[in-house]
Image (cartoon, rainbow, N blue to C red):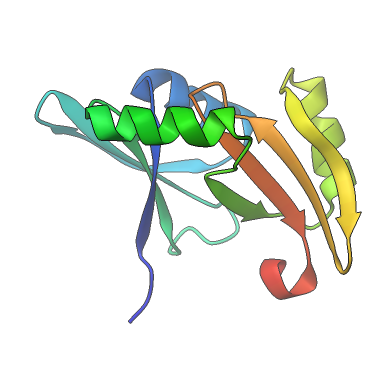
Length: 132
């Protein structure tokens, strides 16, 4: 068994698609109608056959509440592995991304947290066991 899709609740699928593809650099894999919304997934450019990230509409009241509470409490909804947190931090800052936590060393891991502009906090981590 392996993880093939993981999802993130988003307030606006078009805005999220733009942020996750144009700003973060993920590649759109699927974008198909699914009722009143769309099934939009993205993949890492380094692993285009790997786990897909689903941009899930937060139209259900429970999803909105879950997303809002995590954001308010400063809890990231997911973590992306990066080779160099400081380099990625600078790249994203230059693109106007707002960080809620600057790169911080925590033992063998360096972490940073940013606002995805779609209702979520996302953590990036530099750690050989995560990025390899």
